Length: 262
Image 1 (cartoon, rainbow, N blue to C red):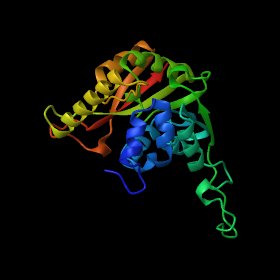
Image 2: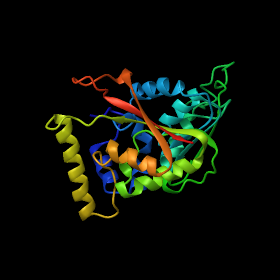
Image 3: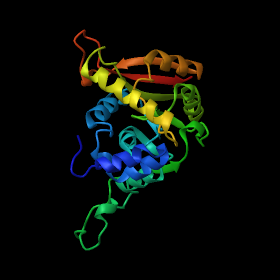
């Protein structure tokens, strides 16, 4: 399941028995070598679809982790991109992956290894990193575009409306909050039982162990999500992510949720 560069079973066990924040601090150096990192094909499909909604000047990656969404925003925004996460370890990895203009990634900064005449990192929007809880974002309405990848399972259903309201308050009028959402697996399929088993195991873990580690795959249902977005003030539409394929019945395997602050 993991590459040789990924975490060991012991490291994953220690993470799973930690809080969400500390668990991701521990996992951060190897996170991009796990299946939990959003696949490039999903990032590319979202980038292509969102580009049609622009142009954008400023972008916010909510629960940015190691910065996959920031990489998307750098292709879409002209002036400024901000990644926000509450894990210091994940933010450290993100900073190293996206150095400021003129810097090189931290793994390549040895002067002895740097060839003469090395060109600086290509210019793009300014990138900033903020450590904060997404349930209490420290931003005025400053962004044209917000997005998030793979983070919603860390929020209980009762917290979802508050999270959406925080994003709403960080967007300018006309700003858009976008994220992909996959179609649920067919009942009885291998994926269905895998997700059901994972969520059941997490519920048992959280009933028996503290601190809790909230991560559920089956609590982010499309109907409930659309209702909470609307309650938060958004006008919502769905766009098929056709690059990710279709199910046997012809419906898309994933959709892009586009929530607009009017």
